[in-house]
Image (cartoon, rainbow, N blue to C red; front, side, top):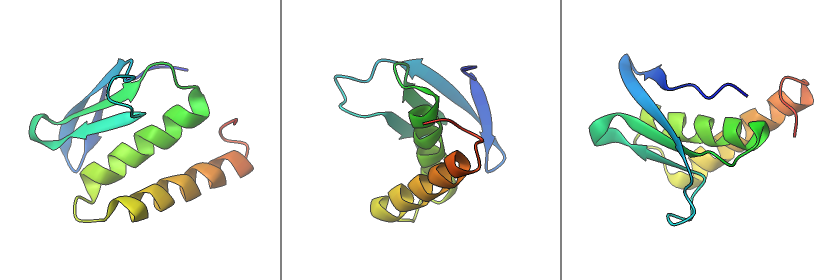
Length: 88
């Protein structure tokens, strides 16, 4: 899995930081004030995809509630798995 270091979200460059997030008890975090997303470096490709999508959605759709973001990310990730684009 290639660990990208940046991504464009809503026309703004965001830094992607891969690190252990055990203390935070999260797979990923989004920091809108500094345009940064953090992803737990221990995740496999399937969970990393789901987490990155989840955090991307938070940054793209900041007014959407957490449960809806979670559902959208999980549905897209599952669709990609069923299409054999990512492996669980």
